[in-house]
Amino acid sequence: MDSKERIALIRKGNECFNQGKIKEAIEIFVKTGYKDGLQRIGDYYYYDKKLPLVALRFYRMSGSQKKIDEIMERMIFALGKWLGNDKVKESPYRVKLPPLKVSPKLKMLAQEILEKHKEEK
Image (cartoon, rainbow, N blue to C red; front, top):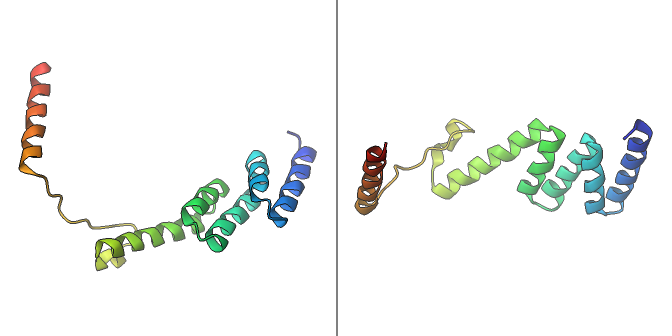
């Protein structure tokens, strides 16, 4: 698409967005690769609709690393709260999980599969 066609589509996308026709605006912004429009779509889903995971998709397309980091930090914080782990504050990108508990039967089955796999080689 040439620059004139792209500019016309972006204008149409902005009009659609302003009129609340979000789906049409999304199609146009994605087609044209209009990063500012994609960021506004992300803001719409993040702030207005309270759907951070949907917003994350548009922030990634727009290259809005600051917004991506903010959502990721909030998700990690929420996961830490959900797990009851207050030590998440040490690092915003690390989550310490409790040790994994494996049933003895499952452990024996896994060992059998590994032994069988060794014999086949």
